[in-house]
Length: 274
Image (tube, rainbow, N blue to C red; front, side, top):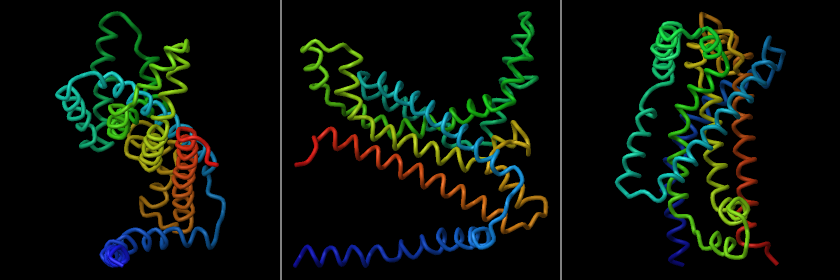
């Protein structure tokens, strides 16, 4: 009886938060997406933008997750102060907007950036690097700077609490380091890696400021296409709602896939039931 009363009280206490989520998230998203779903039509450049969004976001999220996993593994054997210092420094990019981050990279790698001018002074031709920077590769670099700290906040606690007993047992039985890490350690960190990748993917899917700065309004991204449909006096609500629906669906599919794969890894760690 006491447990039922606690559950009922918890549900009642959650009602204000649920109402707030409905008012500030569900209703606005429904009003935006509704016209696009009611009258779907072809939006020029939407398929190209969809492919570019998936490719750039997936690559940037994967690189950010790998970088964060490497940093977390390097900090695992370090002292508590070192870990706290790394987490504090990694939080600095989180306080900066994508626009500020993009301009900071332009000051480094742009046509008149510090690195570019230094290479020119050394006799190197920096035009190839500059052309590469003002393209999808440069956008992935900026996204990596933005996303890696987010992935690190997810992976650091998991890597710090790894159980190495299975790894050492596998090594004592003759398994190589790579195979032992794959069989004993990877199942422990895989769900966290998938969660970090999903978070980074969702953030990069919705980001548009850095793409506008580096690639302009012609960037092959759904978020930039959505801004173009809503900005400069444009009022194509149906087209913008359709693009918004695709963005929401992308994030939903990524979250669902990560949840399914994470559940499979957890089952493999516990052993199959029955």
